[in-house]
Every structure is written in structure tokens, then in C-alpha cells.
Image (tube, rainbow, N blue to C red; front, side, top):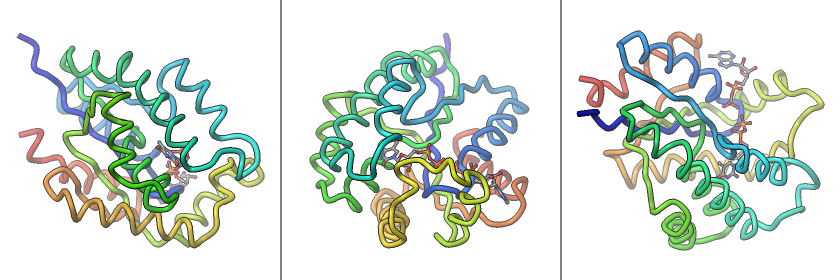
Length: 210
Ligand SMILES: Nc1ncnc2c1ncn2[C@@H]1O[C@H](COP(=O)(O)OP(=O)(O)O)[C@@H](O)[C@H]1O
Ligand SMILES: Cc1cn([C@H]2C[C@H](O)[C@@H](COP(=O)(O)OP(=O)(O)O)O2)c(=O)[nH]c1=O
């Protein structure tokens, strides 16, 4: 009998180190003999990557938060159906760079939709699939923005043009979501060397790996 895998999402604002840590955490889990699939949102399938292209390019006001929420939900539905559920069913752990809590933070708390509206879209699109553990990387917005500017330079996407106030609301939203669901969430400090952050993330999964 194949054991069902665990579904882990990595969350936090831009530049906190999610993409970096996704790869390092995958290596750490593989070293423990686990089968690991890494993926990201928006994206993870050809269809969802096409929707990502619509979301990430163009003027900041190209889409309203309500339309964005629908596009993210549609991309997520394809990703869940074609990649995440099959991988979990096959016994793999799935590490996902952002998931539903990004929609709750960006389009919800910062964008003005209610949490109920976003969770309703998630029920329709993805049958309400929730991660087993959500790891939120936390660091001051200014420090994360500095990392992001160093990474992207002139290639910044639509979302990178958001005001500091918007990014502060996003960061606060993740902390508030974590406080409401302490079983699922862990807040993990994102400062210091990458290897130190990975060790904190592994520790935050200890109850799932034992
Ligand atoms: N622990 C760290 N210390 C210093 N720089 C880091 C660290 N982790 C990631 N970076 C760098 O910061 C930038 C943003 O990291 P990235 O993983 O792309 O973040 P995110 O996916 O959250 O936007 C990248 O240039 C990355 O190399
Ligand atoms: C998944 C998701 C992402 N986003 C935003 C957050 C990011 O600004 C952008 C793309 O995410 P991402 O590629 O992870 O950007 P970064 O590496 O800079 O963190 O999309 C939402 O607004 N809602 C969502 O549901």
C-alpha cells in the first residue's frame, strides 16, 4: 500500500527566499528517503503557466483583485487536479511555492475580497484542498524588497510594482492567518544564511516526518 504524501506550502512576501528554500528543503527531505515533488503557483502545469503569464504582465491595474482571485483559482484548479493530487496519491511529498494563503493575503486582506469569497472559489476550483503544513517565511518588508531588487533589477513583474503599504498588509495578513490556524501554520524567520533557514524549516516539519 502506498502511503499518501504530505502537502507543504511555502508562503511569505516577495524576496523572503521561498524559491531558494523550496529547493533546499526538497534536498533535505530527499536525503531522508522521501519522494518529493516541487512546484509553484501561479503555475505548475502548462495551462496554469499560461494563466500566470496573464497575471504577471501588464499594468498594475490590468486586473481588479476580484478578477485576479478568479484567475488564481482557475490556475490552482488545473494545478491541483493534474499535479498535486496525483503526486500525493502516489506517495510523494509536494512542496509548493505559494498556494491558497497567497490569495487570502494578496486578493483578500490586501485586495479587499472577503476570506469567505476566496474559500468559496477554492471549494469550487480545488475541492477545498488544504496543505498539511504551511511554512511562512518572515522578515522585514524592506529587507525582503532589497533582496528582490537585487534579484530582479529592471525585470520586476506586475506585482513587484505594489506600494510598501500593500506589502505591509500582505505580511501582516500571513501572520494573522497563522494565528487563526496554529496547527497548520508555522512562522519561520527568513534572515541569516540560507542553510540556517532550511534547518528551521526542517524543524518545523519534525512532527510530520517522524
Ligand atoms: N538566506 C538568504 N540570504 C541572502 N540572500 C538570500 C537568501 N535566500 C535567498 N536569497 C536571495 O534573495 C533573493 C530572493 O530570494 P528568492 O528565493 O527568489 O525569494 P522569493 O521566492 O521568496 O521571492 C534571491 O536573489 C536569492 O538568491
Ligand atoms: C499564488 C498567488 C500569488 N500572488 C502574487 C504574489 C506574487 O507577487 C506574484 C507571483 O509570485 P512569485 O512568483 O512567487 O513571486 P516572488 O518570487 O516574487 O514571491 O503573485 C497573488 O497575488 N495571489 C496568489 O494566489
